[in-house]
Length: 115
Length: 115
Image (cartoon, rainbow over all chains, first blue to last red; front, side):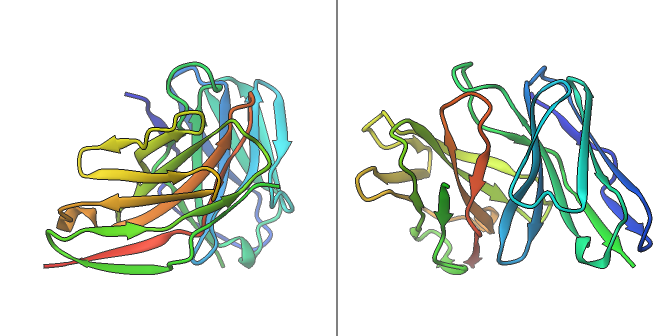
């Protein structure tokens, strides 16, 4: 089975800190995604990557950056954490369409609190 | 831009009864995928069912089935013989078939199952 692993389940950081959220997948998927989940807003895409060193902005990229140096790892970086970035963060991976399974596979989520 | 709308923030169903969750989407594409994901309290997103737009036949997975109306851009999920374990947040999602494209999610519907 596909496994997507996020480095932390819960995280508490201080305002202004640089925060790294790590995600690793073991299925050699080209596509990887970072979503933010907030009540009433569903999942909103922050960034996605369709290949190593390739990235594209999603719907809410402000205040975030990403890094994909290796195919299996996709990192989300909060350059200077703010309280409005307190949220649940979900990482996902998927193969490109046309390669059998088309759905995304998700990690267990990181609940980040910025104080 | 593609959008996905779930108009029911919350639904309740009695155990063993049937419930239908609604989803509409907006797209100008003709070839795409639609998904229903389940997120239980554990936060792990689980794929419930998938529909490919070019297939006219509605997808079914055991007690879960969809009513896919392409012209109306509607994609509802029917859960038959509801069980306590079905209680969760349900998300409808859309993805273009084109390589590298992102998943777009609705805001979610909380399903409560009463015993």
